[in-house]
Length: 441
Image 1 (cartoon, one colour):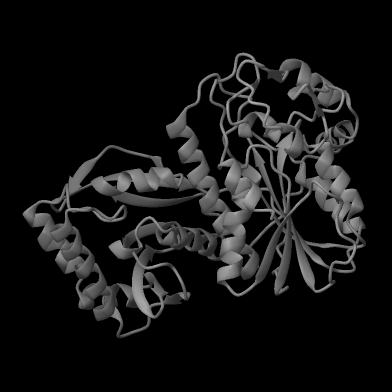
Image 2 (image 1 turned 180 degrees about the vertical axis):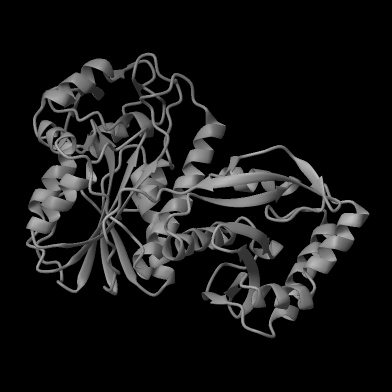
């Protein structure tokens, strides 16, 4: 399969209906001949009557007519070749989505949806969901990127489909600002890889749109020689309705903002409870210009007793899509930064500056080392951001007075020697250890 390069998104222009029709027909022909289904195309669940209706719907004349009626057709080109199309009716309904099989499973479908979500936020900020009628072979794809089933499977015009919706968060937001910087220094703190995965998804879109992006770790203090022309990105997990001491220490070391743009991504297992308010206030006082913040619900190891792979994949897929949408929002001036919950947010921020919540956290979720499983690779000690793991004859010993309970050691232990009693023997992690290390090298 060809590699993704020279990616370009364009709105369809009058006269391009034939080009779009040719793509869809090519997708259908390749799919039928190869027997391999694109994740965004269905030939099952379509009767002969449905095929006639489908051909009529994708004809050049029908596509051109829908464009005149206000439908939006966004096209994606790879090295000058049309590789995909997304048609939206109004701001909130995906009515057609096709990807050339050569580019299936390469993220083009999720990017087109992410752009549709961003456009919806821009032109209709009060809309609460994006909807689609998913044909049989597209259900897995839509569920993977976070859509939720909203009705029963039914037949219409010879085509079977199931209604799905993607909830959009549009409330409690402050005015937006557009990201103007051409370069981004993206600083990340991550435990099991969630925040890094979200940062990578955002960075991928920013790079695609021509920005220079470098991902760096928060494990060390912030460099003091950052250019004032460079925007700052922050990605971190939410913990104790705030974030880890390592993140706050990093923010304290950030140099004076001098008007630099800053944006943030937080990942959490349930609710951030408005910690973005104190963060915005702190950054503004340091002289930064906040342009947007996004908080994503992702899997973790604290709130589960078994490793639910399918649920975790759905949560992760939806969060990647939301991170991509957030990148487009930053570029289009639609990103927001929530104001938080007065008093509550400030109280938890202040509490997180003490050791009390982390002692309590560790007491509930103590990290134990199984010497029989341990291979003495020393990985845990080398990646602990708090320096809380010491080695006794090669075996890890966790200092509970220093541990921040980020669970990085648990997630990336190759043999599961480090674990939380009562939690899954195979803990959740968003990526492999090798990908985690390579991201900061």
